[in-house]
Length: 156
Image (cartoon, rainbow, N blue to C red; front, side, top):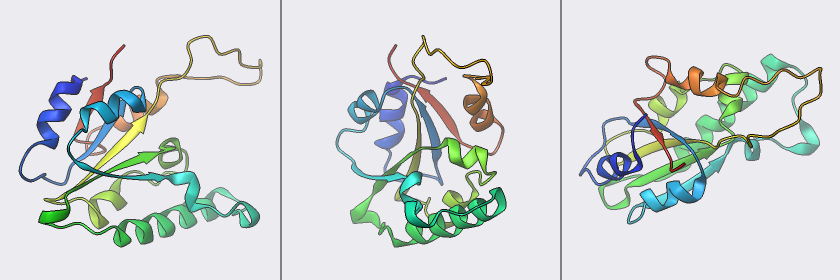
């Protein structure tokens, strides 16, 4: 994993090259590394209407893909409006097999970068016996080839 200073270097480049990157760490540390750049935030949970939730996995996947595409297309980007989009609740991308292709197709470019935020879990979480938690599963998923270009780790 790369250091926060390396993310700052990438962000300061004149243009980006279809960058979807992963940040592993606290959001506060991420915001420090992104000083001096326009930031937009998207929580994937906000793409769902609590009063009208899809009922099965395929319906959730279709809804998530459709709403994500619409939201990405609505965010303006241009040379005078360079934007880093911080995406939260990224586990949904893995859980429903949406992946990162929508970001590459509909948002990323010379003046638009996507930064997936994967905050660390608390170390001392007590899970019920019925739940098996693999704390590295999402990191492994996003670290696969062609999913993200870079993985950066926050402090600590």
